[in-house]
Amino acid sequence: MDYLLTPIGVFSLISYVIAEQGIDVILGLWKHMLMVVVVILIHGIVTLPMLLALLGHTNPYTYLSAIREAPIMAFSTASSAATLPVSMRIAEDEGGVDEKNAAFVLPLGATVSMDGTAAYLSVAVLYIAHLAGVQMGLGEQLLLGVTIVALSVGVAALPSASLVMMVVILHQVGLPVEYIALVVAVDRILDMCRTSLNVTSDLVVLKIVDQMVKRKEVINPMSADVKLS
Image (tube, rainbow, N blue to C red; front, side):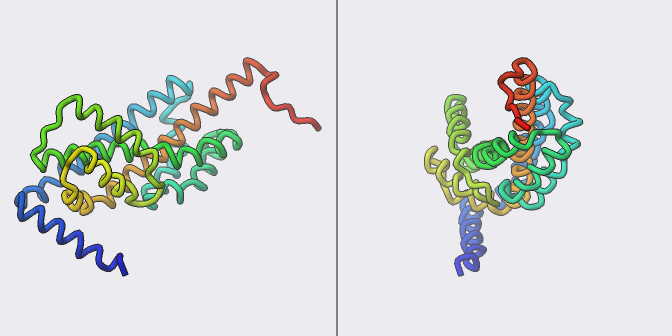
């Protein structure tokens, strides 16, 4: 029955915030959404490909095109855990990754690698701080970033799980928790975007690890597994 009361609770929180700050906070949500999407796109099409090219010695855009089914699946389900079987299949069949490496990296990444979640939480907390009239200095922002990256490791690979972590972070930095109601209003579409980035990041890290392992085996064949017939 709790889920039936959720819309009423969210409406009450939003009503409180609008009564206190005015309707402009709702109209300003498009800026919040745009900023989150821009940060996610920059990380997904610039930072991750650069790391893949430098550390994995792989054409990043060819690889990302080959494994695109997994991020699309993540976007539709908003769950890294639900996308995991698809990610493993795509990484092996289309990405040319060894099964043993995929079996180790991807389940671990679905739990601890939360690039999109960390980016989203950072933007959301700074947005709430702006609405609440709280000015955060450079040192406070850096500390916030470190805190969010550390806490995002513990976020469950389920839809909207980061909202629970956001409550903890808002308490930690002394911001009003009731402002989270505004973020809830647009959380679903942003959750789909950040989950897609989480899965993409996992697959990029997997390719880098796979390439490193293969190069090590070429340099030192004696370290590779020997299969006896």
